[in-house]
Length: 123
Image 1: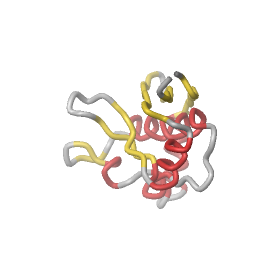
Image 2 (image 1 turned 90 degrees about the horizontal axis):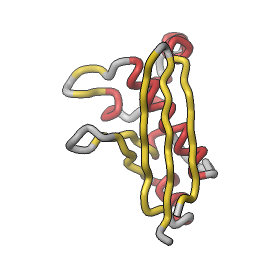
Image 3 (image 1 turned 45 degrees about the vertical axis):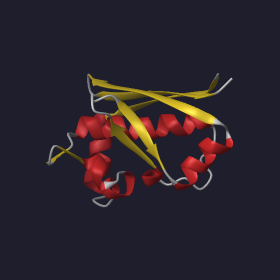
Image 4 (image 1 turned 45 degrees about the horizontal axis):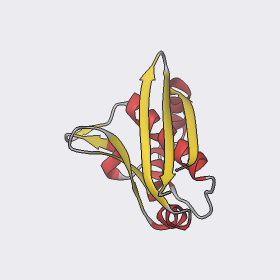
């Protein structure tokens, strides 16, 4: 059963300006594992997509009480499909709502990044 749906859109140029203006912002938003891919820095468009994913997850859960950005890490499975590694308060919110599955889709094109999240519980 679908419990919530969230979507978020990020203007990549605006996101970049924010990162340049506040050098510590990237490490506040993303765990080290989210900032690297195959030993190289993650492209800006991918970071923007990950930020959109985190915002979309908060919307889908319907609660952000006590959540920190590192509590919801965007990860990829062996096939490269995106998902979340939930921790601490974000995990507690998901458990309290009976969440059994989280679906994430991200894309970027034409200067924007978008993420769509669906959270489900067992019927």
